[in-house]
Image 1 (cartoon, rainbow, N blue to C red):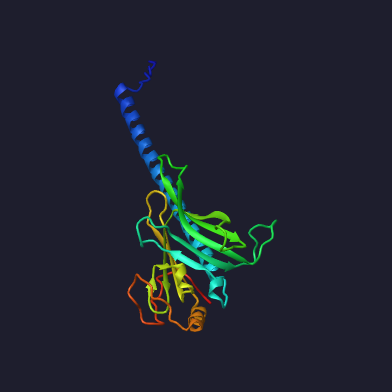
Image 2 (cartoon, helix red, strand yellow; image 1 turned 90 degrees about the horizontal axis):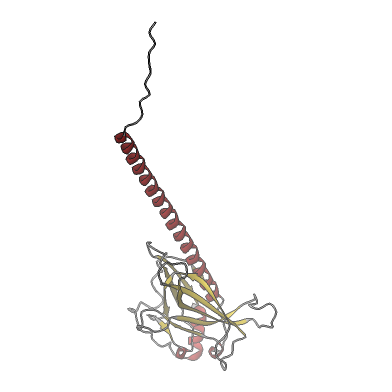
Length: 253
């Protein structure tokens, strides 16, 4: 009986090279797909975080404005603001007196009147690989304010990546983009728009709200016996019929 000899044939060099090439190609495709998925998840996370901060900032500003300090004497109140788009390089801020019950400093005596200021600021972005700056919405809370002293208080960051703080004030006749201290009165409506830009590529996000003081403004105007000064900026609207805001929330007196 004849025995059969079995010869084990190995892979040729060409087969090994083809298999290595296919494996490298599959690995590159898998790594690219994984990176795309990871980048997409990070972008969604950043957008969600920016949206949360934007809405939080809008709610905080609306609540503070709704608690605007009211007094029959206009000299005891304060509301001064300068919006974006007036002049290049001009500061953007909103400063007013607020009546509050939550103490800013638990260990020190405080009254129930605070000066609140919102402003835009920039600082270096330490998380970025390249030297860049990020925009911040800051809030300054000053217990026991005094017009005879320089402004002070506790400065904190409300939200990051806020690139636009735009305000409009309705005085009963027309809208204006600023409310100077010389007005010595309170506007009937304040419209605030915040626009945030997520890190990297992303669609700018916008939040708008309106706070109104119609009875207070009317009472102050009738008490002074004079009409309120006309503002500058947008096209005048019919008295008592300001345009509705695009989105956001309303806080009525």
